[in-house]
Image (cartoon, rainbow, N blue to C red; front, side):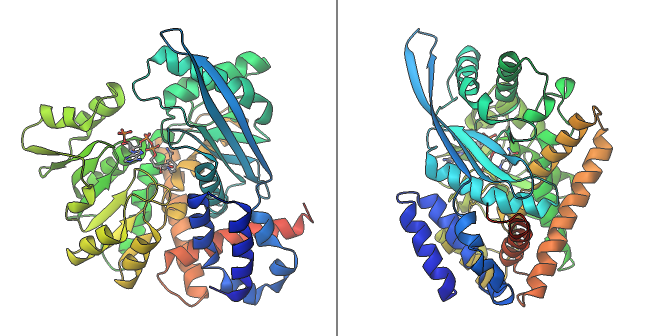
Length: 445
Ligand code: NDP
């Protein structure tokens, strides 16, 4: 790493102790930025990096609620409003027991660059709670969401901060959150949250957007080598919103998607995953993958273990951070892997990314490959602002154009900085320069 940036990195890590995921995200970005600072010493003079790593605002709050047995439960809520140089803070809410400040900050930091890459006028933020929705009744989830919003509402707004979903936060949770916001503020402010239901301000294609976008980005990478999804053997991790829609899109392009996972285990379905059955089990029934295996012949279910033990030519990690390590990467490479598209945020460890890059595997980092979700959220905000709703076809066309644009911008930036095909470099520099220029123009804030 560039020596000037090393000193800044060390200060950032020391100022944010115990936040391993945030450290990882910062280091990964800093490693790409040496060449930019050679060309733009003004960024160093204005302390752009030091400012970028310090969130504009961090909110931590108590979320008290009662469970179905009448017992009081206390969770912790977070919203990190990281950077508003390009527009209102924008980024999802994650409800998962592993959530703490370091996770929210890593996600918020990544979001700044991702949102810049989309070309839409949105800043970066992220939030969530250590609440675990798994095994909770609808009524419990509603009471939790209402309590969460009873604090959050004062910090958000369509021109201020616009949350959306992430792990553990889907259409049901966005509905409860929006209802409580509307009740407290007495405003039908559609643009305050994205991922809403279609009949009350949501956008067609938003539920599919992250998974579809990841596959579109990966397809663009494959095209640079005269290849496509047609005939690829694909393994996907996760079986939530991003994973299911990535599976559907990859299949529509002719791929055989043979495995996916949840946090308990994974399935191998050599006939190709049955997306309708997967949606029924995971989305409608909120069930487990072993229920899928029980209902379809020829499917094996592996309890525990790693889905990355299944051979693939294309890997789409769509579950969570650091789920694909260096050993798994090396095994996949040995067995014929040609491309990786990250649907999740930072699912590959630093060692795994190094293995992919050294082996010449096409590697699309999450901040570029999974940006279709937030881009379509920005399209939802556009529709809300103009009181309009677009057709599926039109919205999907916009999403496709945006993903092809992100791919091309990353590729062109990597070329410009002398490392063709390095999408990590292209994404980090492409996102950074846009935000840095805006911060310079706006003075010392
Ligand atoms: P969901 O909650 O819909 O699904 C998450 C999936 O990943 C589930 O199958 C879950 O298993 C699995 N999973 C979660 N945590 C773990 C873990 N610690 N170990 C193993 N498996 C785990 O979330 P999304 O699909 O929305 O999000 C998935 C990823 O995509 C996240 O990294 C998120 O940040 C990223 N992302 C999401 C966007 C969106 O629009 N939703 C936008 C951009 C990125 P189980 O069912 O057992 O809980």
